[in-house]
Image 1 (cartoon, one colour):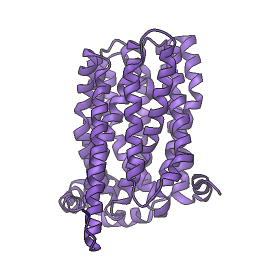
Image 2: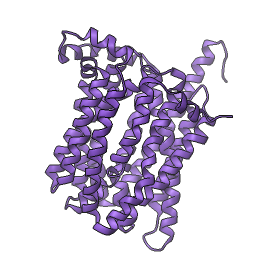
Image 3: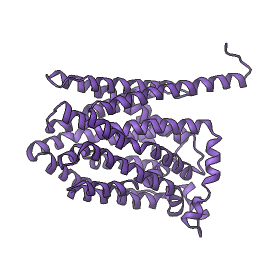
Image 4: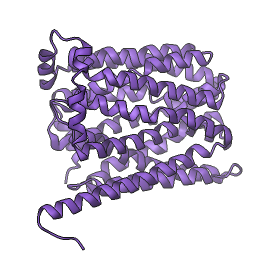
Length: 424
């Protein structure tokens, strides 16, 4: 029996194929350097609090750009918005990161990088608006897999670090990121086309400015507040976003500064996480699919919790720390693969196609607004103890399990009441 992901990959056509097939270029550019951003900043003289502050500046910038992303995308079109804002959000910051020397460089790059919230919105519209609904989860799984394949090139980063030391090696990776990301921008633009919904929104927004289009947010917000699944999706997205922010920002910090893992070995660890994510998405996720996402969500949260607990318990001395770090990454890989795919699918399946751009803009604006202080909070916690950011993560993940159980329990009760059944 053919694997659903292989089947989906072969059958992709139009914009979904253009987006999925060009996604490896993002992984081979940004995923080779972004995981080492924190230790790169520390090596250039920033402290833990400044690293966390840069992460918070990045999140605040996302809040601003998320607010205007819906009107901007409707006005510019999905296709052109993706190309234009990808260049602003990724290509230009790569040049700044390449020449970075102080906190100011990273702060400016973080502000520009926050505009990725526009291109994230437009790219998601480009990806799924012309896709068949039953393939949405598989498409998002393929996207994540494409990004994770970059980890197989991590030994290149390891060799560069061992030969050149950390800072020169990461600078070279940022030049590589600029070239490949810019190539992705142009290739995707020329092999894609505007979506059907995008063409309608372009026509409807003709003659209106961005602020006039943003004025329609009131009705969209009312629509969202009446949708219990949408509210549930927003809460889950917020929790996952906070955990991802802390994990991305401080994982390399705890491994490098507390566990004293040598810099040349740092690029090798993501291979484990990526291999497990790919395995999970290809062979386990298809078996977990059902009419509800409850069980896959619970499994994802549980795996992530186990991974974070093991990370905190890893000893500083001895070779056992490498074994435990690897085990931690195994659970992280399963947790990441499940939660990232499911959260994106949950939003995609519960958002009106006609108002997708504006609804997604509000959803991500709210999520980023709530998430933004946690970079700074994580930095303060890390200065007290390198373990504390991950203790916070564990608490948030436990809260996620509670939210899942409450939501699906109430949903089950409501469904049984609607069919005349009584649960005792």
